[in-house]
Image 1 (tube, one colour):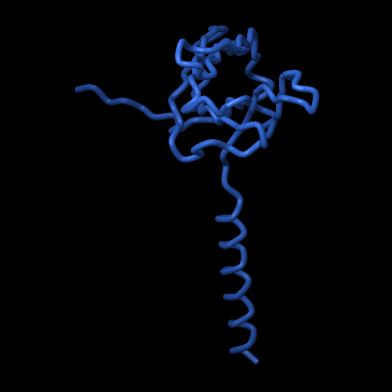
Image 2 (cartoon, rainbow, N blue to C red; image 1 turned 45 degrees about the vertical axis):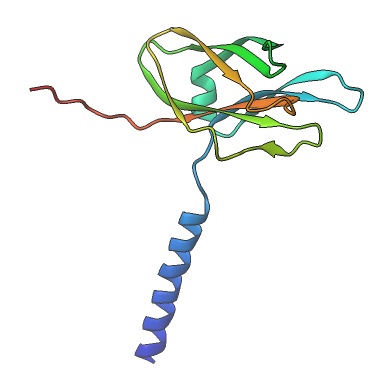
Length: 148
């Protein structure tokens, strides 16, 4: 009887560990542009982290092309808080079928916003097949630098 209870307790702990590892914290706020069936572009705003979405405002979104025909995006993000926000951002690019282009090539970049600061974030698509994008923003890790 004791062996079966111990086995059940261990199985429950292992199951909880797998559930915790299966839910990654990948994105807090996602903003982007998508193309509908008629070829018209639409702005897309997806929020996965309510706290982070209350702290940030996405401003102007300007979509254009480089001389080489690559999609280029400039957008502004403004902090609503009087204190620093430490976050990370990353662009995701999509083709006409909605498939993500080279999903592992763009790394998360640090994004630090001081009180009420506005930052412009720029991105260029990796190839000319990109017709839509998303900018993903997630909370970053707060670190303390010790200078001696």
